[in-house]
Length: 561
Image (cartoon, rainbow, N blue to C red; front, top):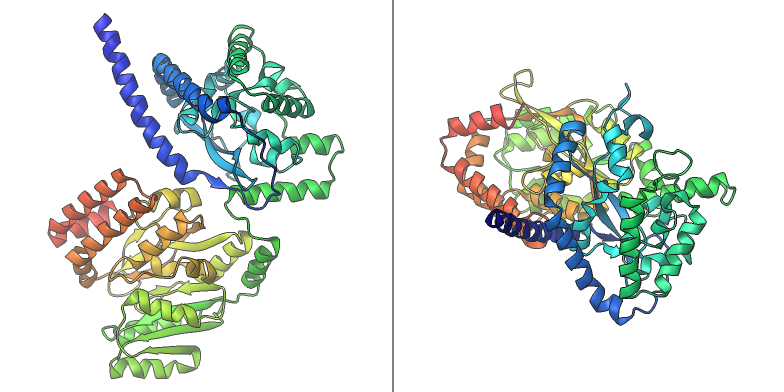
């Protein structure tokens, strides 16, 4: 029995170490600094808080995870069975104030306590309708907060400190109240042992400010013991006035007439922009809205000599006849073309702004030349052998009007062979910003010819890289990692031409090596993980050695719909 226990603890320690390493790397990727908020003067930190407290935190977190690992497993399995996936609930919270006097935003982990039940319109039901008996029990016992031990391990939280509130609470705090963020947020604190969520916001924030006045080992140890007493022995409730969740600070201030309706709306909007990673000025967002409403956008295309004239004609017609017609079509002639292609261009000359390269530069560099010629902020990409559906750009403009903080809006594609009536497959891409970010770590999260993007955001990343293949994967990966938000419209709005020639390009060593090198670049800059890089490398090599027929089967039957 002793051997079993020893083995179990060894495995627990190894597993904890691995998970801590992974979550530390993840924290570096997902933690970011707030920009659009006033600075707060940082207080003087004592020796214990600066050096000893972190060691104390690690020891407590590792000890808790190892000792309670069976409990973690049991709760995780129960959550999976009763509430479904995901098991963990993650939420952005304000963390420690940096040297610039502004908060960092980090991801906090909890066990999930609510279902994802929605109404007929797809809107989440109220909290009280989604909170199950099991979830309520997890909250009442504070067991839902066990995963926060991993936040302590990755350095975003401490065992003791002011509880991390919501971002929308932070925007309503005064500068004095925000000084609570000069201490690392904690699993428990003075406010938690003096009433938790059952006390008023004023009292709660006062207790937090009281804590930061004197941070020392003995006070932290006393708070840990009191927390265990309050949460697990006396079992104090966590909510106020029979509310399923605690009242937001903004709602409290509005209810007690301490803020105006106008200020309330402004602060809520500020919090939303922080969470979206979009802290552009309101003027910038309004300008994008006006551009989208007025349907002012450019089309960017690149043409080279191997293109077929009939394909070019179909592509140009599809853009000229958009329900929301483009303001301009920038077409880069990438090197000398054939007489037949020149004839088509002359035929459509009144619609085009033609830019001529003396020699062929390749798609990425050719598009960079065209980008500089675009006069509008919103640019719709288009290939010279594909065909956009009539309402493609109108729907993308509408999305920018609704969500001006987005930098990229793409769509699904219908792949055809021969004519557009012969659809052979459909490539669906993730539609939400969060899913796109994760998907882009291994695969292309966009269909390049469908995207409409902001010129300024593309130029901030230096435009397309000088690559022979996968220029789009590289650019969009850099944009996503830099914090740009993107969405794909959940609809196929472009007919994409497929052919044997495309299959040959996919199978080429140049394409294989280029894709592996791109994901390696993502790994080196911290976007993709080493595991992502290995998986992509292995998958690409397997695809490379496969016969074209087998590869086509995988693309059309397994990776397409």
